[in-house]
Image (cartoon, rainbow, N blue to C red; front, side, top):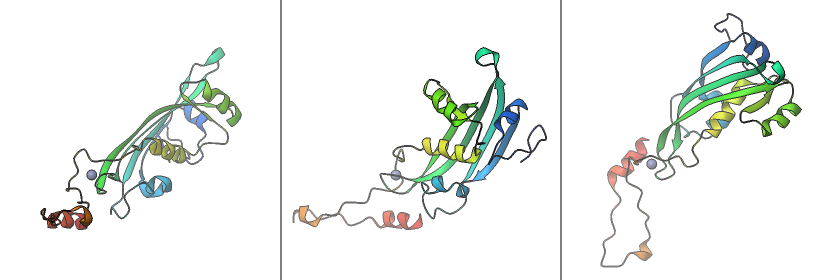
Length: 184
Ligand SMILES: [Zn+2]
């Protein structure tokens, strides 16, 4: 994958230090179908591919004791059809990622520093998979309860014959609501 600096970077195994030292950036559109964990959250058989626009930018910043720190900014956005928890129809949900990461030598250091840092601290080695990281962040951006502000179709009536008194005629199911569900 080429960048602004003309150098080729491998987002699946990124040399983040070189990336930051070059002040490089990556920008791409990724099909959601290549992120299997996120794909599982999407409404199945929705038809059509969902594209995720993402970008990463590396930066060296002055750190503790004059040693420059390795930083990376990750941004992404995607409109993902999720299942509305009220009417079960698809609800297009905007997922946004906008996060800074600081990188340290290895996982032991990252773990130790992550607890006492406001930013997320990750390890330079083994080289991180940016797309895995992106997927983690998108999963965290998922709403707990995806829901329409206003559901498009009336809620399916709960049919309980035993509770209906003989004087009250039960409401017949709305034909258009059923049709609308079939067309989804
Ligand atoms: Zn709904």
